[in-house]
Image 1: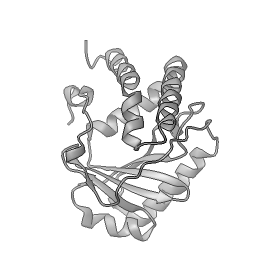
Image 2 (image 1 turned 45 degrees about the vertical axis):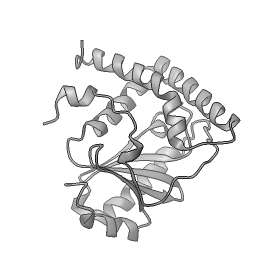
Image 3 (image 1 turned 30 degrees about the vertical axis):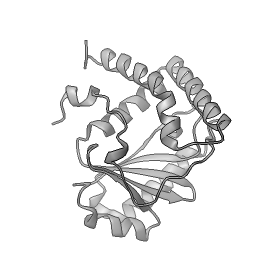
Image 4 (image 1 turned 120 degrees about the vertical axis):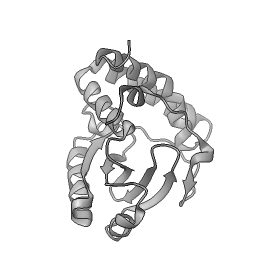
Length: 200
């Protein structure tokens, strides 16, 4: 059972804790208006994952900005996939890659996170073990933004400002974009945790 302390703990990005199977590239950051086709794209991808993995796919969730109507986002579907043990790549990597989901990185120090990517439509599949604090945070934040349009709008402004700053420099890595908007998202998370009674 995951503790409240684990759920509310923020983790800074650790570049030394990432094993890249596909090297990241410098790129411009496109943040676009919400597209009502994103939920259907998620459902199609989720069904593809379930067909590939069967009972190994314990849960498939639509998370991230494309899961929140009205929120601008990078046009990439973010998905959380829970498997019995994210470290056991033999149990899921082959079937996922046969279905077009290519494993691109590992973060053993950060909840044994694995990331797979799908190209059309673009999607990031975050792979976790059961009761992962980060997956719980993702779902809590999604539900909070759905219920709190003022925080959705504040987060939208932070996303647009971050993308504008990165693009003004000629592009950057996705983590550069994430780190620029991190103060706003952490403030929203902390208020959300207080509202849920997880912190005082």
